[in-house]
Image 1: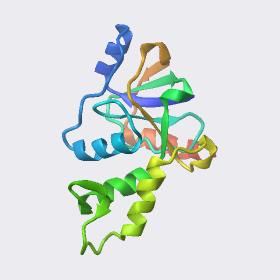
Image 2: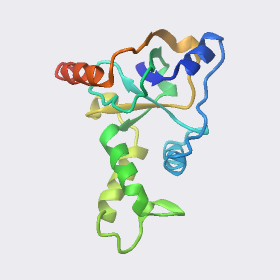
Image 3: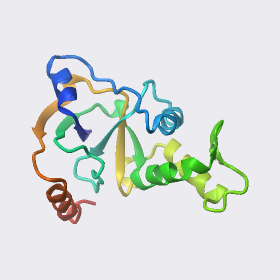
Length: 172
């Protein structure tokens, strides 16, 4: 499966040295990432996010001065989630029980438990690629053998966002 991921130059240097890259835990999203790791039965400290080439995508989270790395990843190493469900999960997370990410705290008026359970089930359930509107690829690590090519992104974020918006008209 062809995956594009936006990473820092330091990640590219690790891959160029022939080493496997494993992401370090995020401080700001540590609990949310731990929940995703549990839902997808991943074996890593922190998931690595990417987008599937040729499909609608949201890459607005990339860092400035990033490197876009194109990977050819064997399908068995890729987990998929619906981007909007992951975004909803992140938004709902503040209302979840600290010991159970699938349970909304009683009295939370902003989120319905049934809606949150649907999001959690969607994230857990792996489907065929074409059943996702905006698939998000999740990897446990990046093997340097998977790197097809890379490009240092020097455009401004606004230029990249306009380009992505135009390209999404041609993706399904």
